[in-house]
Image (cartoon, rainbow, N blue to C red; front, top):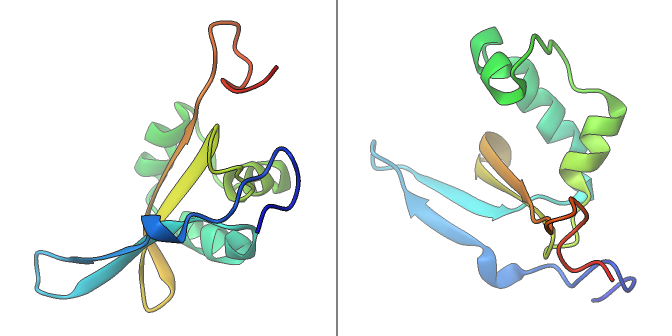
Length: 108
């Protein structure tokens, strides 16, 4: 369902189950607005060192602005994926696609 010109339909075809080294499975899927609490919980559990490497500075907690940015995606220029086990995040990855001028790549 396309909700607005700047948002695209949830890409369900990106979802996949993967086998982990221990023989268990994890689900990889796009991050959505409904994942805000999961993202905050995940971030609270990662080490201070991991937080530092993610932001290149001490960053003890995600701000509301960060949570919004990391969970609101158009699935074209901004995408986030999560690996989950039992609904809980065990890993995340995100990207923002930008043009030469620093604006979203598909911006007019």
